[in-house]
Length: 160
Ligand code: ZN
Image 1 (cartoon, rainbow, N blue to C red):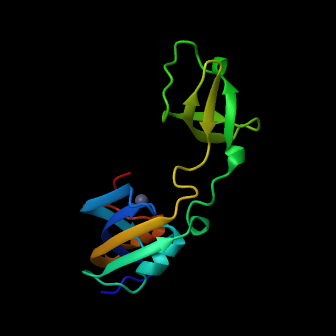
Image 2: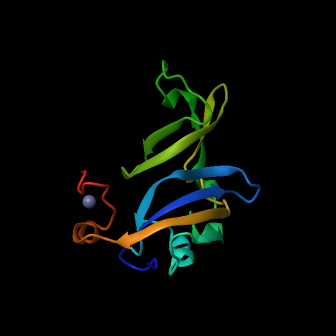
Image 3: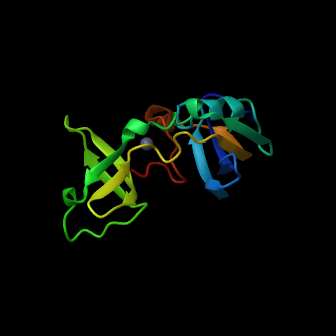
């Protein structure tokens, strides 16, 4: 069965950056997604279009077609005292903060100095050229319920 719109695909994938660092992977046969529902980045869906079980796909996606370029404006220095005094801070620690208009933003601490903390609101994969190695394990028709919800349901149906 070919992987086209409204099919559910079970795939294994490894995502590396251009220096072959593994950024993400799922190789235990458990990753499934609904094709054509924008559950994956469009460039990835395009590369998988028409593939069948057993097919292997290598695709390189430029940052502008994935999580966008890194935005230096999203890197900010904030006073250490903005964080609770008893809050242990560590580089790599994720935080949720809010912009003045109340929009939630996820940031990561990238540096801790005596009086200031550097936070980065870029997506971890922003500016990263994505190298995917993908193997299509199986393809099936989506159920009516999955199509209504726009995502895959696991064995036994609805789980949320
Ligand atoms: Zn659902």
